[in-house]
Image (cartoon, rainbow, N blue to C red):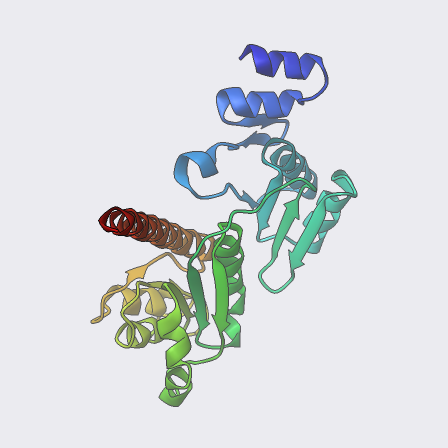
Length: 272
């Protein structure tokens, strides 16, 4: 604690960053930012913008960058983006995905995580791109490599089969679909990797707004997990957690293999 206090006194650490280290969160006029979430849970904290004013969002984004080196905004309008850009230092790198309605800010010294694992993001149609894009951003920010397979809805199964090798190459899949939500069920019957169904609020009439898609995925005959309607952040975070476990397992396997190789080399030299 003394080191933190001395760093604040010397001007090397801001009060918000010091509070984040001591309490795990940074307090602002717009609310508290959970700076310790990624360390505690493995999932980065994100700022849901569409229920906040641009000013509130900008304040929280500044606290996020100050305390963790990064800010992630979801459901962000252009007004939110403009407010954040005005609030943050010019050296902060901004990455805006208009379709996914996300904004990611990285401080110059931020070191992004890197995982030895691939997440596949699959959409039934163009209408699913917003929720799927949000999932892709979160999985990527958790360190996974992300591959997109777009517009392979079940109205023509040949579109899915054309990408079967890509789907099977992923370590985990997020499959977004609206209307009756059949695509995740079909994909889960073709691959041996975990599938996360992401129902999307497309469709109309009876079962519209994602209700039929959610119900269909919950009733899936093939094995998959399902998140809430349009919950791209949750789907991406779940995929990121799976990717992290896969990456850790690969690292452990490489360590064991190297140890076995070293042991064999030593044994060989002894026998000589």
